[in-house]
Length: 141
Image (tube, rainbow, N blue to C red; front, side):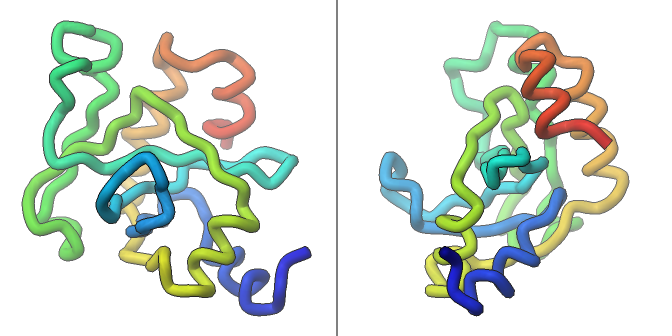
């Protein structure tokens, strides 16, 4: 059961919100990520922001199309132009994310512009990288 602070923090977990967190055990540094949706079972879907396009993606057209450039000029929390990796959906339990916001491990950095969010949703809704269930669950209106 979520604590009161966690419930308040959960209210900030909305589509297009950009967070920075150190909670990802498989990553040895803090990461920026963008919430793209959530399911009925309290799982939040998100995409990571990377400094560059991973070499693994290069030469894979469908994955390359899902690398969305975001400008440091438009988002003051970025120190340089970066890419939102929309080729791989990651999920996290909403209560775990809310708890990490309450403890300060995860911080809210901003919100994607309406234009960027719309472009990203167009990319993922039309991508062959995601199943119809993922699209309906995390990318629907």
